[in-house]
Length: 182
Image 1 (cartoon, rainbow, N blue to C red):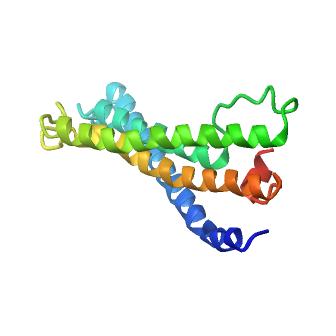
Image 2: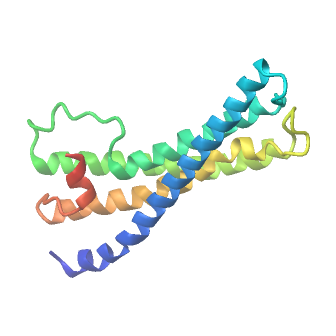
């Protein structure tokens, strides 16, 4: 294996930590979602439990964060939807090239999500407030898109690197994450 791949592989712990941080964040968001929803439902039927008006908007916002962040995790684990019907029929180099092309397309989407999402979060967010939380800017409602763009870029950099590495090492699977998926 060329020395450059050995050198770049030393950055793998950064990706592992990033994945763990995003996973913990998603778990915390899910716990908050469950607790807030439980409080809202119980508040409708049990008189001494409050049923604040803000619960629905906060739950929907937390769900948006969870959805896009968990989608970025799917990039790292290569568990997103993909077409593999022809993988057994096509030459290995063609499959590696198609994987690389797909990863470039996802990287382009991630960059668009970051740039356009940030513009939208700033522009739309500064004009509005949550109806039930008038002190909270709607920026936080739109912020999941650029946040997911950042996470997707991080994991796509690793995926593109793995594609290039597999191409130049004769398609050998050297990444432990890729071995787990297959």
